[in-house]
Image (tube, rainbow, N blue to C red; front, side, top):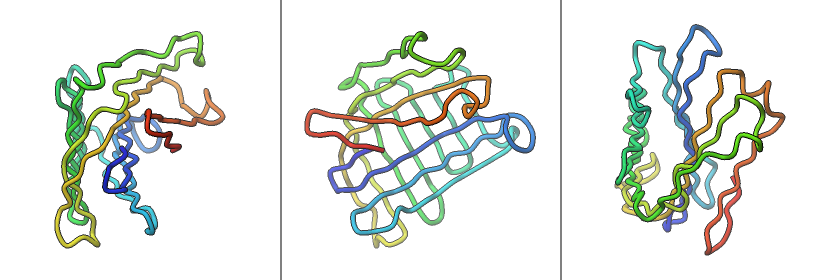
Length: 169
């Protein structure tokens, strides 16, 4: 997520069978502000304490919520130390396609959900005295596999671009 305020957010929602038990969920993100160290926040829960909708477009892990229902998606983080409330306009970014299987390792899937979707909302980091209203662009990618990702890939790079420039994450 690239915001006009100069902030950037890298956010992941993960469902995994790695670690203790099956079907563990974690949401981990980093808020980047020019001139500051990245601020990390996370939520993790075991199966009984998280929700994934049947259509797999809504993921709720404690204080981390991701809703990908069209036409407007939402990222909502409501922790004691950080609050992020962003809405994505999917109508302005109708690209939603799978990466062709012959370009990926066997049984590894990648789907591009949004490219530069118009985004608006607020962020409130621990060093801010009040929520900051901001706008920007969001890129969304969904990947999945039944195997450990590290068994399939040596390295994963995600490069997101927009006509005004390119950001590397």
